[in-house]
Length: 106
Image (cartoon, rainbow, N blue to C red; front, side, top):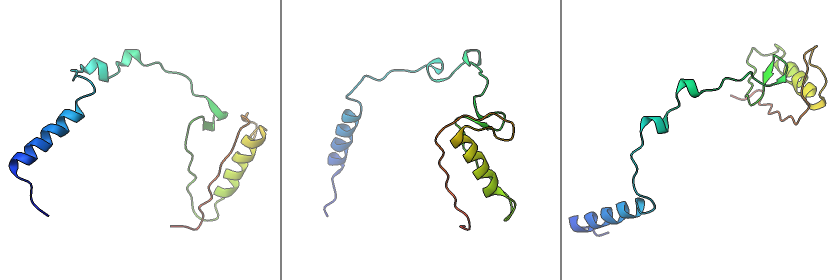
């Protein structure tokens, strides 16, 4: 394979830079365009799938020693959500449940 000359490399870089910047002119962004001021942040009360137990848009992981009941708790949660029945006196929303049981894998 032949090596490219310095002139060829400069031309290739110039063409690459022209293509990368051809869509729009560069704009100088101020920090205000990138960052959010604390005064502009709106705090909302969380929405729960199971009241005071599982928040919406959350990822749940149950960690504990073998035989501690993790799978039972996960199934109990999942069945309450799938049916919409209360979870031990906590109201539960009805919805689709997906579980991944990766037991015994390292």
